[in-house]
Length: 67
Length: 189
Image (cartoon, rainbow over all chains, first blue to last red; front, side, top):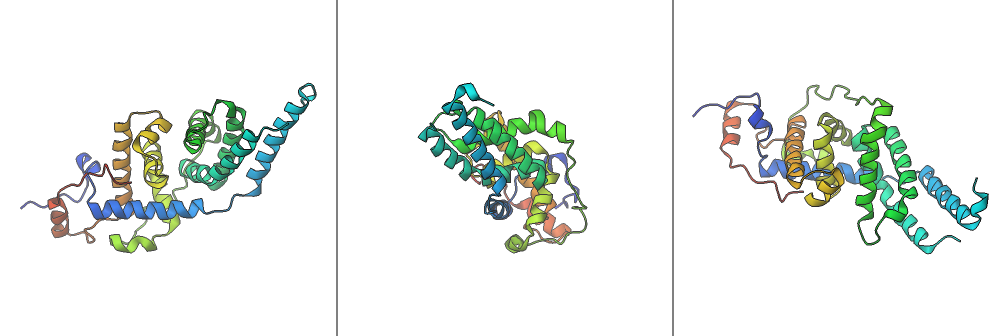
């Protein structure tokens, strides 16, 4: 039986991963991404939405006074 | 007077911000730039909120705007260079069952090594949990293209993180791995 090359060929680059590795990748990726998703939202975003909302409210209230 | 629709949508927007930030980080490779991208996206999204069809997926809609903004304007402007930081420095091989200990930064650094189109496909499908069809819509490409990119990204990520079931670099292990029947990944997220 011939020994496979250590260096991946172009075909290897798109070879299917075995099941364990695929599961491992998915789990670790989800774990990392999950940590990112759990980061609290900084105030700057909420402030931005407040501002966007109030600008809109302002425009709706008195369209002639749009800044 | 502010419509109640705007208020409800604003709540949904807030709920989607963590997803926008995480996806933006995967695109930008930098948390500060990612936050800038998210803020610009929020302004854009807000200005066209009337085009959003209620009942459709707001998160997908927002990520589409974010992605389009990134590729059309943001990336060029910022002249971004991913922070590679010697990711390829000698890395211990991991058993699949062991890389719960894998550092989050290692994963993010490895992700940055993958081409953008593969990376975003992998993130949308495997991390965000979108269906292939949804990811294809967000990326503006065919479903088959998304599947192919996800597979390539997974394979590349496994190489970068040295996550392979054959955990030693010897000819016996490589032969053993070559004997395994390839398993379709199409149903794996």
